[in-house]
Structures are given as structure tokens and as C-alpha cells.
Length: 444
Image (cartoon, rainbow, N blue to C red; front, side, top):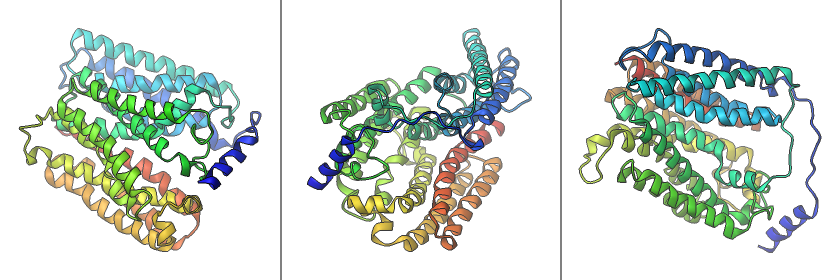
């Protein structure tokens, strides 16, 4: 522990280097993302203007608006924020993301005059902001993100890990739609579920950072977090995490009791089972602990189906169980690919990750095995009748690419190959869940 403190103290003795703005490579430009976002927003507004006066069952002759907005939201979350150092562009992205959630919730709802007006206003605002985003992106010079001294606001945001939460929310949102027979639940229920899920995940992440503050100080990936950097106190971080966790329960309680309890169970599993027990004691930490990240589909299913805690039968949960299993088996290959890249970090911190204990070759073999199991599970949803042929084709294509990257790691032992699988795994899970929603929306 003294070595950890000495390392942290040494890092604090040197002021952080704040580089001036530097010219970025072409791939760092926000311009392609902004242009695609604007194009999707034009389609979105046209779709809503067609859709609003018609019954809820009538579809516009273009892809349904909520599918477009799901792709837009994912595009901004995964590709937008790391691409700019411009303050105005960053805030436009932050505003567009909740607008994307609003458009998803409003689309495919009963187009009463109130909801029709809200849908048109939301789609119009999305288009205006997307055009402003594109204009600013093309008028400004592409630059890499500038490292700034973090503010307290940014430190609390860092505790919540918003970029990870965006993927968790997608795996909550689509099961809500599937569980409600291909219709969106009431708008208030969608928004409360997403807000409660954000608070629950953010609370769990903050408590995890409090517990892991000692090992975070010696890992290059985590040493700039608020606690190792002495920018926040342990009491602040723990209080923040516990407060968010309690608030999540209160926000989700109006949805239904089961949804609120499942979210809290996810927090307890992540903090107690994974962080306090498994993470530092067994090489199977990610395998067993991955259940925590697989709970959001259960939360979404309970909210969408409005299941009663005391009356729900096992058959009511069967599709949700397979959604849980997909994320559960996705987690080991996703995280082990990152663990290979960060192997020295975990070894220095004394965390028994699979690459540290069993070696990288065994980890690569395990990644292939779990990838095969995950792909097989993705096909079971078709057998259950939850989704159809559109999803089946998408799952086979996406799964084949996942397996290609996993098998490539058996031949290519470079960290670049592991990093490619890690990055693709994020896109894979997002697109797989989007494919579920697209299939259910287009095949009634």
C-alpha cells in the first residue's frame, strides 16, 4: 500500500501537461459523423411529418423514425465525443443525445395531437441542431481533443462513465420495445426507465471507483481518475455513488417494483459480488461478474412487459433470459481483449485477470470459445419467435465478423489485433440490439 501511495504522490508532484491544440489526423475529424447525422435528421423529420397524422399502425415509406434515431444516438455516442476539442461542438453533441432518446420514445406511439406536436418539435429541433453541428464541424479545423485540467463537474461525470452507460441504455431500451409486443410503452415509463438505468449504472460505477482507488493509482488506464488524482475525497465519491443508487430506486419505483429491484440487484452484484469478492480473488472474475452488465435487458423487459413481482411465470421471462445470456457471454471476450492490451497494468496492480494468470495464448483460446457460445445464443431468439428473419441475417453477419476478429487473434498476437476485437465488440452489441428492434418494427 505504501508503494501505491508513493506512486500516486509522485504523479501528483508533477503538474499535468496541458498541450496546445494539435492538428488531428483525418480520422479524428467530426465532419463525416456530423454529415451523416444531418442526413439522418432530414429523413427523421420527413418521416415524422408523414407519420403524425396517421394511425399508430401506419408506417411511413422510409425506415421508421425510431430506428433512425437509435442509429443516430449510437453514432454520436461512440463516434462523436472523442472527435472534437471544440466546446460548441461538444455541447451540441450532448444536447442531441437526449433529443435522440426523446425521438425514440415519441415514435411509434399513438399520435394524439399532443404527441404528434411533441414528435414534430423534437424532430425539428434535432434537424436544426444537426445542421448547426455540421456547419461548425466544416467551418472549424479538425483537431484532436485537448487535455484540460478537469473541473469538479467533469470529475463527477467521470465517476459515472457515461460512454459505457450509453451502451447499457440501448440494451435496456430495445427489450422494453420487444416486451411490449413491438409497441413503445408510455413516454413517461420509457424516460423514467432510462433515467433510472443511468442513475443505477452511474452509482455502481462511482462506488466501484471508491473501492478500487488503491489499484487505480498504479494502472495507466485509471490513474487519472478523481480519487487517485486527489481531486475528490473518498467521502464525496462514496456519497455520490450511494446517493445515485438510492435515487435510481425512487425513480424506477413508479415504473414497477420489479424494475426498481432488478436495477438495485445489478448495483449490489457489481459492487459486492464482482468488485469486493471476485475481482481480486479469482481468474473467473469477469466470467461470473459479467452478470452485472447483463441485468439491463432484464430491467428493460420488466418495465416494458409491466411484469408483476409476485405473479410473473418463468415463461414470461424466457426471452429476457436469453437477452441476459447474450450479454453475459459477450462480456468475457469483450473484456479479455482489453485485458490483453492492459496486461501489464493488471499484473502491476495484482488483479488476477486471465491474461495475467493463464497467459495471452490461453486467453485467446477462451475468447474464441465464448464467442462461439455467444453467437449460438443470439440465434435462440429466432427459435423463440421473439424476432424473425431480418434479425437472423443480421445476427449471422455480425457474429461472423466477431468470430473472424476472435480467430484472427489466434494467428496475430499483436495488441492491435486484440484492440480491434475490443472496439468491434462494442459496435457488435449495439448493432445486434438495434437489429432486434428493426426486425420487430418491420415484421408485425
